[in-house]
Length: 425
Ligand code: DI6
Ligand code: FE
Image (cartoon, rainbow, N blue to C red; front, side):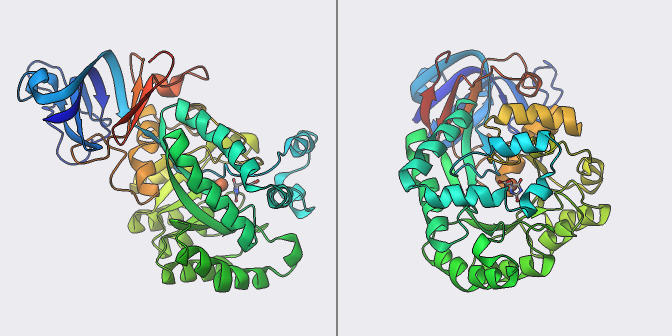
């Protein structure tokens, strides 16, 4: 007998590749249309042991619901998606950058502010000065906002410490946030985010520190699930990024890269050469970079919040990603400087409007492809054997999740089968 059986719902399974899940496409009764979202109407989902035990049309259930599960819930036609996944954030930090926002409005560029010692360096100063509880309280609020929108998995990067003690503190905070918010947190070590002030003009010496001391310590203490770097003229060169990636690989950690955000650094191809889980931003990536990513299976993580905030005008090469079959994910990049946004749903709207992605691309981009960007194969799709991480929505069509700007919360979430309901749920 199953633990839970959810009835009277419509499911966007996101399982459009591979065999459809008990869905006859174009069947005589005309009900299910699998399509790119793997939609099943008038569906049922069974949950057992934190996993999805069964999903399909209600009429295909192998018996009367009450005989199949200890607990049945009728959801009055709600839509269900996999729990949303925000696969790129920097949401543990001290201070804020409102003054820098004002400077940019007055004409200063993000790079000019960074070169003058502001930008990331100012958040590093505030984060070093903050104790663990202060960092924890700030991060809890931001994760709470994401969770209210149906997010069940969040990736959080370090990178505002740039010394071992503060990087450890950031990752320790990230580790504490999951339990009270019912969100599964994945942690990424971003020691190579910027050159800290005490290493000014000595970037190679700082990379020595990252490679020789920080990375081995973080890996042996199991504080991170992946390693990221910022490849950019205001951050680290391709050869410096390579050193970090070689050490990460030696330590058994997968890599990701902030690539080609402000200029073409060949970042996409570099990430692909290291079989990176993802290359992120990618506004200045070339066709050859897209091709290399496709060959390596590296996910393109698109971050329209940063594009919007920095008033960037060059879009990532979406058409090239489509042509070469590069999986595209969408994430908030929640950070105090270039993307002070705590809403994945608003970010999804931006991906449609600013990048001209389709609503189907964006919905798979915050579920199936976001899971792949984190190297997770147990979520992002509603299918038997997957974690029972689900988001419930009071909408008439899943496209509404992309279409509206503000105001929408999910009616509820399941995290590994544990339910949490919002006010209107
Ligand atoms: N790119 C980003 O979007 C964030 N880091 C990075 O390398 C921004 C970080 C910041 O400005 O604080
Ligand atoms: Fe980022």
